[in-house]
Image 1 (cartoon, rainbow, N blue to C red):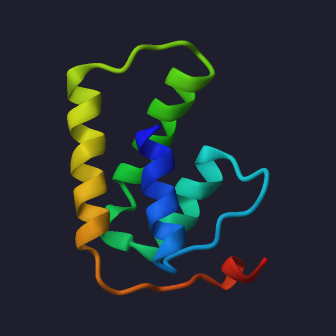
Image 2: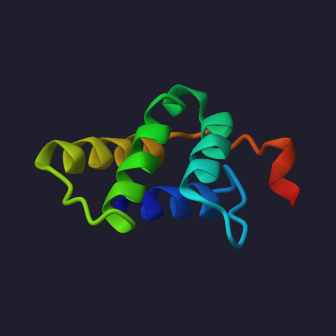
Amino acid sequence: ERFRAVIAELDERGFMAVRPGMTADEAAQEAGLAVPDLASELPRAAALFDAAYYGGHEASRDDDRRLRALETAIRDSSRPRLTADSSR
């Protein structure tokens, strides 16, 4: 659920536009365009989400720590940059 919270935060703050049916990978890719400093961490977060949500993988403490740090970094990001695909 942390990954969803990260993406929702980006959507609410105008960094990206979430679309119905958007996959975690698609969300991570679009978010990475909007927040380039976090572009390398977002695909990892999407993979963790997929593993937990679809694969039944239990997140480790390190996974949780990593996602909490990502949440904090997103909250601290100040410049929304909508991508060209955000208008869809």
